[in-house]
Image 1 (cartoon, rainbow over the protein chains, first blue to last red):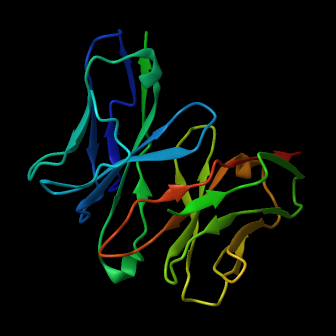
Image 2 (cartoon, chains in turn green, red):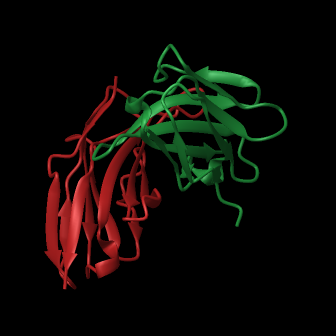
Image 3 (cartoon, rainbow over the protein chains, first blue to last red):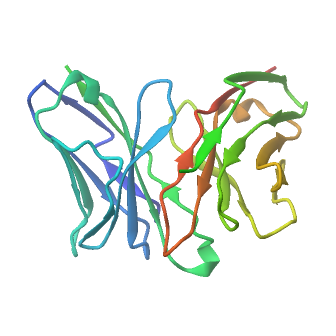
Length: 116
Length: 116
C-alpha cells in the first residue's frame, strides 16, 4: 500500500508529557499537511511543509507545537507538555505538484491522541 | 480568507434513494479546486470527488456526482442509489492553487445516515 502512512494510530499521554506523531507521505509526494480534528468538528489546518521547509504554519498554536519534514525520513508533529485540550485526531495528508494529480490531497488514517 | 459552509448538520436517506448534500463557499478567486471527502466510522478521510473551477462540466464518479454552480458559489454532492456503506460524515473542501498547493479549507460536515 503506497498510501499516506501515519503512526501511531492511537497514543495515550499523561498531562505534561510529549507526543510525537509521524507521517510518511505517498510515494512521490513532497508536500505534507497536518490537520487536527476535534470531536464532532471538521478538520482544521495546522501546518504545510515541503522537504526541509515550513511553508505555512498559520494554523499551528504558537507554543508547544512544532513540525518538521526532514530530507530523509517521515514528517513529525511534536506536541510538548500536552494538555487535555490537545486530545484530538491528527491527520496527515500529502500531495504532489504534477498536473495529473490535479493538486489532490490524500489523507492518512489519522493518529488519535488521548491526554489523561 | 476562504470559507466553506455546509448548512445541513445531519441528513438521512432510505437505501437505494437519492440524496443531495449542500455546500457553499466564499472566495474572490477565479481558479480553484473543490472536493468532497467522506469520513466513515473508521474515521479515515476518503476522497469522493474533485471539481476544477475552470471546468464547466460537473464531475461524476460512479454513483456520486456534483452540481457545481460557479456564479452561485455552490457545490452540492448527489449520491444516487444510496447504500448502507455510504453512511458517514461528508466534508466539502476548497483549495486555492496559487504558487503551489495551498491548504484545504473544510466545512463543518454533514452526517449522512443511510437507512435500510
